[in-house]
Image (tube, rainbow, N blue to C red; front, top):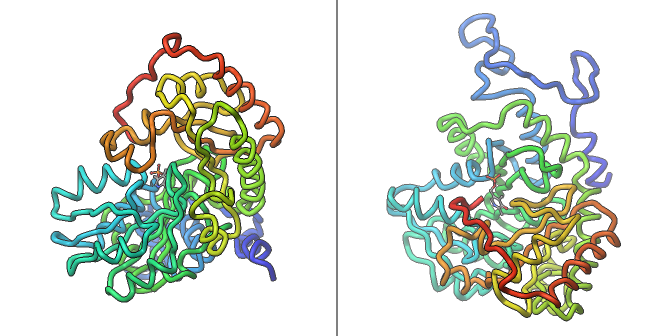
Length: 398
Ligand SMILES: *Cc1c(COP(=O)(O)O)cnc(C)c1O
């Protein structure tokens, strides 16, 4: 049986009523027959049947032993970092998600957990960064927003030899394209807010562990710290996952067409998309993933924030917003939005230049998306720097 068929039918029909959709158990507690004698649930922070269905679904989707659902992607990341203790070190991908950078630097550093950010596309660099205190390697592939590709299997070998954990933030690829646990990673996290949910209508996160013992440690932290996903959002996430494979196929097809179009437009400088043969990570991406994803980034020949502002305010179908992976196409300007909390020098050295624009291809017709980009880029050719208002500064890194 194919994975998509298996996935759809692994969501159980309700044994009590025959309901074909998973019931939403909107309850805080469960009545017990005698102290400690119950039907598998006692208090809804510790366990909820709707959440449990989601958790086993994501475990199956990623090929892991244990799935654990959280109130956001950042809460999922937070749970993984809580496996560590003071004095431990993390090696992390250098163009890491801005919110993870803020969590590492402004929360965990003061508890004595330090992070060394390196170019994880180079295995030797990662190997050389190891110290006896390295307990965790943290990668994203593709990265946000320059879509750098890291060899998951190569990093997994380094982690295993060193006796440290490898966690992959698989948000950008989604398990429809890439399964890091099958390539040797110990943990996978997701912002379920993005492709898993797929409809821009919830905030959620998941952790999936390969090893059941490690999975139980994450489950313990979920209950101990309490950042659980509620039953309604668990249901929404299940509903999103049901169409994941179908959606991802269309996201990928549009993104590939957009990347090819941008490469030949005179206002565009560089295009970042792992599906382009010219992308430095193309062959590794082709080897470890079934597709290249729905995100395309590019820079403008006029490499200024003002030119980028002119572009992101002149698209019609591509809505200017944080986030990605939903049915509506989105455009964002990382330098002033998602990557605002990363110091300018670090941001630029990670390839996030002033004019870098990130697109999330939605589920609209591909030709309509190309038309929208064409009119916005053609407008730029006549662009005059001084006519454009600055993007309002925001303090948050979403
Ligand atoms: C959005 C995102 C997160 C954080 O997820 P939230 O659900 O917003 O907390 C983490 N990693 C990546 C790659 C993301 O895109």
